Structures are given as C-alpha cells and as structure tokens.
Length: 122
Image (tube, rainbow, N blue to C red; front, side, top):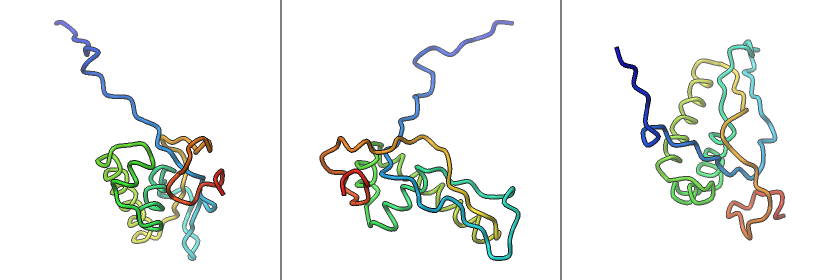
C-alpha cells in the first residue's frame, strides 16, 4: 500500500491574523445564577472584534473586512460563529469568555483605523 503526501499546492492556506484595535475591557461574563465557569463558551478576540465593529460601530461586513485586513467572506464566517456563541451562552445560561484567536493588535502605524476605537490614535 502506497502512502500519499499532500502536495504543497494542496496544503491549506495559512490563516491571516486579523487586526484588532484593542482588547475587550471585560473578557468574561457570568450569569447571575452563578453557572460553573468551567463550562464557559469561549469567543475569540477576533470574533469579539467583528461583533464590536458590525453591531456596535455599524460597519458593514465589507468595511469590517477592510478594517481587519481580511476578506468579507472571512468576516461573515467569523461573525456567524460569534453570534452562535453569544446565543449559546444566553440560551443555555453559560458563562462567556473572550480569549485567544488569530489576531494582532493595532500598532498605531496606520494613518486612520476607521473605527474610532483605537487607543493609539486618540
């Protein structure tokens, strides 16, 4: 039996880091009834950023993609995943933690971030 290796052109594309203006001020939300934090739903920082930009700041998915330096289709996937996690935490009464993900914090070198939330440009 012959083993086949994937060719270089068949390897999945590396994930691009998503630009994030700043980390969330609050990274954990716990239901009032004191649900076990070990059972928390984990949302990544880049998922949080799409929620912040689209739902809080009013960006379109296209604008969000331009800001985060990723494709609109990627924004749509990240955003849909983030909303499902929020719904899961609310419906099931579970804690929600925001941590990890593929992101890089804004370094302040861009002339204008576009969101107005970047601490480096205030």
